[in-house]
Image 1: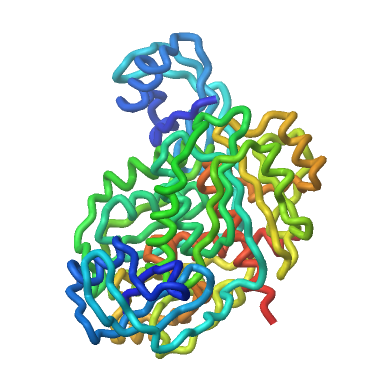
Image 2: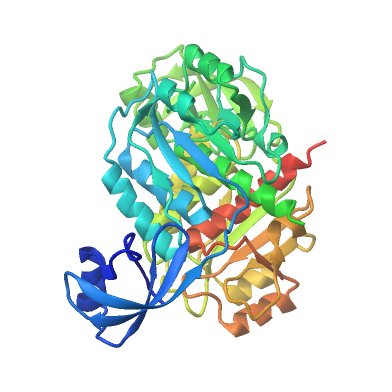
Length: 238
Length: 238
């Protein structure tokens, strides 16, 4: 069944315009039809269409289902957006499919991309959430200068910085991460972090890690880091 | 240093046309300059340019270096190409970055894409190999009907089929895969395998596995499967 997204469903039983249009114009659903709606915060609502309308479709909630969490911890991926926007958009889609709680675009000294439109990334995230049958939409922060990001990390997060250059000793993320730990992973820009940035991250309790002996593009590194958390959790599931 | 690709360097010390052009026209390298060339079979050659030419640049080999293997087993990913070609091209790039030995585009009963141009995928693979500083180019098969692929799997490969539907019992790939094992992973089309195909795979000793509780797109599933092999090998590295 196709899922719709209505973040305010609990307060107002309406499909927003884009989903109303998809529901009524594209899928030609009608009053009386049943649909599934997620709120992006972990709940799914089985609903019946009361008034099919291409801009504001009214529904009644038949049942609210709290969806079980798919992964056992909070995962934050902070990443310097790539020069080519399509690589960053692709990354957001894949992170949402694989599972992430918060995405932070960070601005670094050597970032080639200094600005990014969060609305566009949010649209991609909503689409990936629906497509992968999730009920949780990750938070996507505005572009955040690295020093400010370092101040906003949740106090109990394990902190890792994936870093290419080898003047800092690094261990494998796959071995340093412990199952169940909430985590913030920081991935640098295409030109890598500056030494000052690495020192600032280490001062903020980030542990330098490697993702293996492969040299990965920025967006691949961010994806592999997030996937590593999931796979170690799966491998050690009791 | 930028790497060039010359599969026949051992027999003929020349850069092929596209790499000659990049070397001499784009990078404006000249006779006497040193470059690195990989042969796609695991060797790197330090070379000196003898005759810079935009179509056939001659070099002399200074040193041949056998590059160490980055992963400890052979990894084959067999995947039904996606309807949208850009998703398949993206997958090839990412598989090469993360590390794969053989990519087999398989044609399934419910495949929306029945044909694929291997030359285009090979170009992407060469580019990703250079970019990620590898010396090994994975083999990319022609589009292969699933029954024929099942007959060509290396005899000592562990075999896994990642499958969405749940009428077959599945275990997590992250727990079934044993470090060091060479492996063939089979990923179905967007419409999933048919029951007959699943039975044929099981008859060919493929073990049905899950990649977790997330519903992943075809190309994401193929990437996550390959990445799982790498991460389990890293986590258990002695």
